[in-house]
Length: 154
Image 1 (cartoon, rainbow, N blue to C red):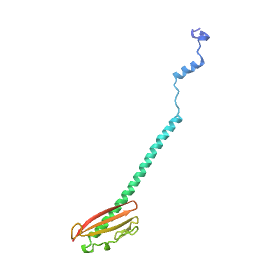
Image 2 (cartoon, rainbow, N blue to C red; image 1 turned 135 degrees about the vertical axis):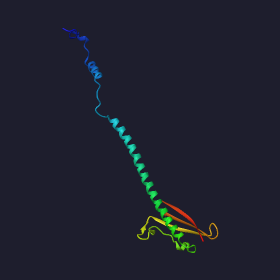
Image 3 (cartoon, rainbow, N blue to C red; image 1 turned 120 degrees about the horizontal axis):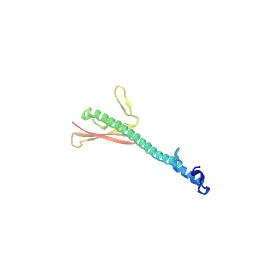
Image 4 (cartoon, rainbow, N blue to C red; image 1 turned 60 degrees about the vertical axis):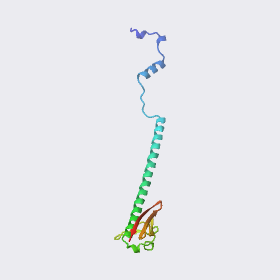
């Protein structure tokens, strides 16, 4: 008989010691994420998503504002070109009346309407010196306005 088979009973280990030793020898494998890990991941994902959505909304607003600004500058330059091509004596406020919302159309072969914009012209005689006129064209829309100015001489 082997020496191990004849062990006294009092030297046998308890079942708990056996299972503890077995657990140390073979580490338990994790088969998934715990609930806490999933909740922490969801918090991080939601914070990141809110930031991305806010960024997207800000970019869309900035693009809309930039488009409105580009159209307003175009409309102001269109009116300034019309004033430049007008003889000096005819450059008066009566010849360039204010255009309210929905009244601006630009283009000769196929006119394009700009209902979200309004523009008006301010003409000051003998400014900055005698024989010159300061012309200011202001274009506004629902969320902003711009103005462009030129000096017209005789």
